[in-house]
Amino acid sequence: MFARTAAKTLTPSAARLFSSSSARQTKVAVLGAGGGIGQPLSLLLKNDPLVTSLSLYDIRGAPGVAADVSHVDSASEVNGYAADQLDQALEGVEVVVIPAGVPRKPGVSI
Image 1: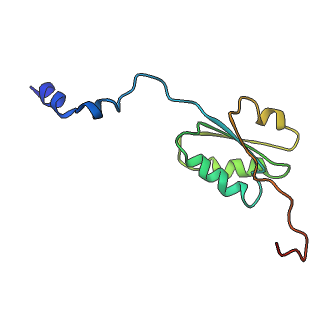
Image 2 (image 1 turned 90 degrees about the vertical axis):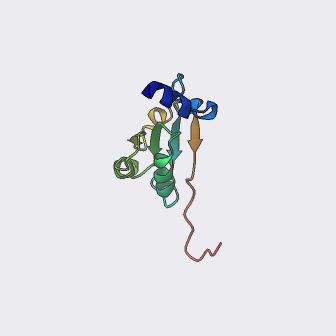
Image 3 (image 1 turned 45 degrees about the vertical axis):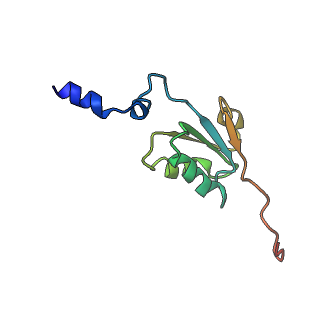
């Protein structure tokens, strides 16, 4: 009797929510993850459910940023790579985001 009631509550649109296919795996790399834009961007990417693996790279401080970002409670995996590990950071990556830039010089307003 319970099975008939449960079957009636599943509408055709709700039945589509159940999938037998596997989830899409997306690996994203952030080059410049130690900067003022790269750190919050990495945090936002860690919260995105579509990102399953996050590679953080910078010439200085990326492993520390990766340690901080990895404490966010989400299913994605985070790895930090130092300056000499660019090849490992880009291995298997589908999306590369580059927020790195040159800092402003003293006296520059724009």
